[in-house]
Image (cartoon, rainbow, N blue to C red; front, side, top):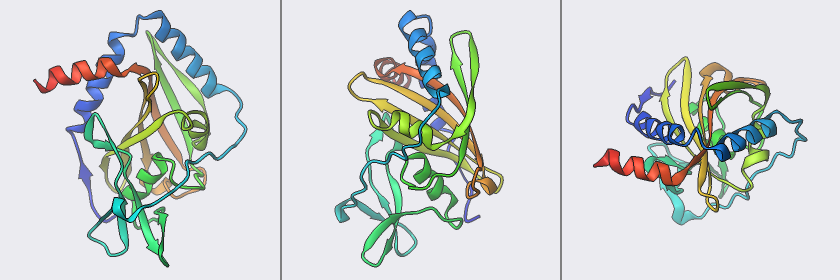
Length: 221
């Protein structure tokens, strides 16, 4: 393990999102939307392995402390630490997303942003719903991207990493309808690079972004 990081401030962002979700939890439309999302996650999936086209422009590259390793700068969502930035390695004049045991944080970031072509991890999701929570059957992690990534922007933030596990938050944002799905995720560090390694996640779905903006603005004041 190359380093240990911890970003407690990022949990303030998570707290704001959860409060926003609670503020609308009694809305019948949200209850219906949560139910639909749960049913979609539980449905049988045909593997599609969907990935957005990868284009890397040199003007978007930011150097790191290690030669040949770059950050492809993306956009931020609500706070600077929640971004679509991912990591690449230069190889013979081209750039490929990193997925390498020597770079666990960078690799998990790339997995969460759906930049790794062969995601062989599984995911166990507990979805928070009004007054209860429901477990989604364990499935291939790629399924959630096949279901959500075509119509939603993806952002993530690794919140802590040590020799035992990596924690992160993952956000899917629907720009047109202006809501998000928030996953709080964790993976044992030793399982990240194993076929069938298990990621656990708590899902808070269908959070309206206008609630987040209002609450986050009040918090900063």
